[in-house]
Structures are given as C-alpha cells and as structure tokens.
Length: 231
Image 1 (tube, helix red, strand yellow):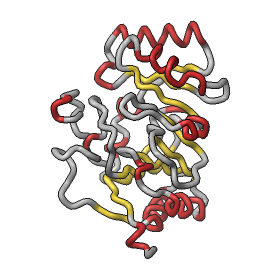
Image 2 (cartoon, one colour):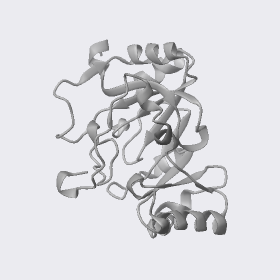
Image 3 (cartoon, helix red, strand yellow):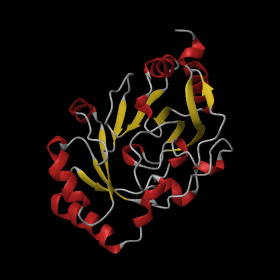
Image 4 (cartoon, one colour):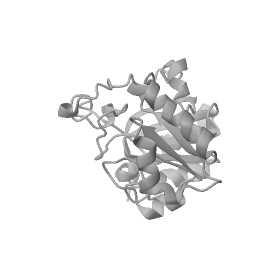
C-alpha cells in the first residue's frame, strides 16, 4: 500500500497535556481521527462524526507526517483518539510513532478490533457498543462515564469482572452532569466504599482550556444531548 493509501482522516492534531487518567498533567500530542459508529448522546467529540459538524473537506495525513509532527512537538507520547480511532487500521501509525521513540497511547470504546501496537490503552466502554473481551483484557486503564447515579453499578455488573487492582478504573462525570450532586455523590461513595481500583476522575484540561491554546485544536461541537440529532 502506498503512503497516500495509508493516510488517515484527521479531525485535529495538537500539542497539549493529558487531562484524564493515570497520565494526567503530562505533555502529550493528540491525534484525533474522524469517524465513529457508536454515537453517544452526550458525545463531546461529535465533530468527528455528526453530519452537522463534519467539514466538507477532511484532511488526510500519512502516518509518517503525523509521527513527525508528534516528534517535533517535544511531547513524550502521542494520544490517538476520536471519534472511535480503531475503526481505522492504526498499524502503520503505531509503527511510525515507535520508530521515532514516541509513546503510543490509545483511547477507545473497545468495541472494535485494535490494529496496531500501543503501550497504553484507555478503554472507555459505551452502552451502545459492547466492548470486545480481548480489548477488555488489553486495557491499561478504564474510564467509566457516569451519566446518572446508577451508571457505576451498571458498569460493574456488565464488565466489572475485568477490573483488577493494577488497572485504574476512573469514574468520570459525563460533562453535562459535572454539577449534578447525585452523580458526584455516587462517584465519591464508590471510591470510599470499594477503594482500589476505583478512582474519581475529571476532564481537568477543560477547566484550563488547555487544548485551545494550540491553534491546531478545534472548538468542540456542542454537547446538547439531543438524541434526535444523534448526539
């Protein structure tokens, strides 16, 4: 396959810091790819898939060019995200990053086959698409989106058998519910009662508007929560 045949559809690529999970606060280069068949009603990256927000001209970039940009940024690792990035074959991108000595982090719902070699996988399961067992086993950490006070209990029933002590399970309030006392109390109660591997989480970068300080970062599509529009 030629280099253009390997090119990936890129929504944005920018230098910021990781605002979530075990690598929170570390310098990171983000590669956000287009496309997602999951369509969460509260998606904060709807610009990667929703027809009201996807631009007419989608930039396609080779893995080599993406890896070169990540290297030039000075970040120690790149975060490949979306959308749902693993609907694309990421083997060439992961190889290009590795060849330049850049850490390879992946953020995925876990519902699709992972093609590529990553040294850190954040798996955030979604109700709309059941995660694959092999991906649950590969995960380095989990991120549960807490939509209401019953979310955590539901996820523990569904995939809790894969939660082990050395893999953090982050409990993130869904962003539009970050001020919901019942949601926040459910996170606090779980951490206090169950302890490890459960940890309270948050999208810290949003409080800093950190991503938007890089001119290559796009303004997010509105959350809305309008299921009639698919987000």
